[in-house]
Amino acid sequence: MDLRELRYFESAYELESISAAAKHCFVSQPSISAAIQNLEHFLGESLFVRHTRGVTPTEAGHRLYPLSQQLTGQARSIKQLFQQKAAIQPFRLGVVQALGASRMSHLIKEIIDSVDGLELTLVDADKRACEARIIASNMVKPGEVFMPFWRDEFLMALPPGHALSYQSELSLEDLDGLNFILRSPSLVTRTLMRKMEPKDIKMNIRARIHTVEYAVELVAAGVGAAVVPDHPSFYNTQQVPLLKIKGMQFDRVIGLAWSREAEMDKTLESVINVCKVNKIDHFDLQPYEIK
View 1: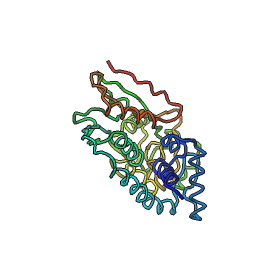
View 2 (view 1 turned 120 degrees about the vertical axis):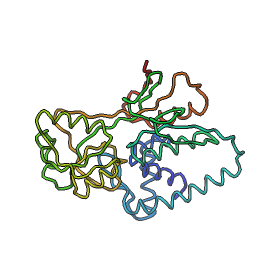
View 3 (view 1 turned 45 degrees about the vertical axis):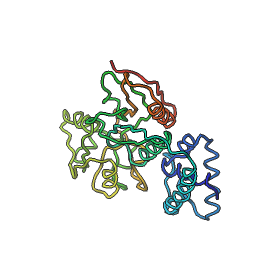
View 4 (view 1 turned 90 degrees about the vertical axis):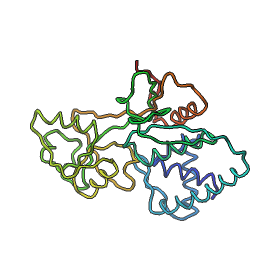
């Protein structure tokens, strides 16, 4: 067991994806897989459950993660003791809600590590001035350059064992009378409600909340269904059925926005590069400008 293997494990744990961890660490997927297998052989326990959407940490994986962080953190601290202290570089980053705590924590950590002396302040993407914003594409303002790097598809999450969960997809009529967890604000949910109105289809609202993570936990507990992004970072250890609604496609494109008048200094350039590295596969991230 060495520090490199632990760092690869931490990336896979945080991103819940072997391919994303490989991209983050600038190595091949087999290198990440081999490191994890070496750790599993050394510890005698499986650290992840592999599935089509990525990987989910096992109980052993959850136990190893904080211990691994201690070791790799101590190694970084030793290195920092012998580095010259950098000048403070303040940077305000606006962040929209409901992007997934684990993937955002990973992205923010990368941004902080990319600039020596960076003092990062996270602010509401809508309400305060900032040097750059991580937002949905519909929030881009005139005069901003927008570089997309994530795309989430929104699906209907159903409680495990629900009668509808065995279907390949849902129809609007299936939603009539369905126990539902309403998350707001949510453009996707509002759009779905408008589609239902002409057919007089109404769901049974059981709870009103703000965060995706709470919605997923309530779905898993059997309270009701919810419209949620399909990214693994929202699910932790919960496995809930996710179904499309026939004839409907609900996507959210997430990207980095900055003013076209902004000075392209080292800090902003580093933030842009980190977001590029973290883009999803097969996704066109060419920046474009809103006039």
